[in-house]
Length: 346
Image (cartoon, rainbow, N blue to C red; front, side, top):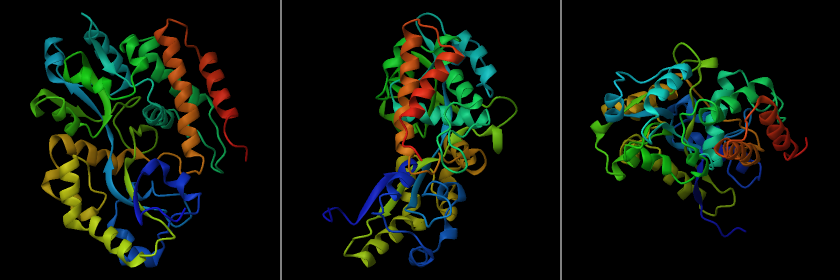
């Protein structure tokens, strides 16, 4: 319309989708130089700024990662000394915690984006990316099917997620966690949310999100997507100099420390990350995850549709699990085939 603002915040997973509109300013070498240079930013954060091989459509503002948060009181009451590090351990631990009307781990079964974040990570652990190298949807590979089934099976087979979680979409799992109804949640940068829910910092602990075996690291031990917020500039702005100056200020070392301390997130600017404030037990796990074991969601123009159709497939599978209907490899594959058919044809 030409009537929008000069600058906008965007969830980093949508960078490539919005880039495909052609409305955003490309961050070429000249524009990066105007804000201090591209090499100031952490590589993982730059990985979620647009399609590979093209100039980024945005610059990182703050970074987040998923971690496993656990309720210390519930763990102590169950005689559990440390959080699980693998999915098998999570299920074993979870069965000790799922009793007396309480559940081991919460999910947001009707939150499409959260569903995508979780199954994407599990997909990486199963060797699947959901898209081929040339950008075509690939939702029905063995790895993708195994990833979705493993996630839904936390409710369907392992019985460590309460059936009511199938309807959660608005942070209800965090509320259950704060009220000692759920012992664990997989969430991104949750400390500020817990405080708002009335929890003290010593009520909860945080650990790296589980992997299939071993410890988090590169490749199959990916245990988080690269979460966060980017800043983009509309290409048709009549105030490009002012826009670049504002982005430079927001991504400057000093403001990065202020912003990310306030949000409980991690600065995507290298120098700002060195501040001791980001080396606390809560934030150190997130920082290390972003450095070593996080992967960017597929940087393809169809990423937004991917979140919608596959996120909906997972939502429907959780509904099946909650209703007691069987969730099988065949039923998972059928849902993913339906999702793939809804994607734009290339």
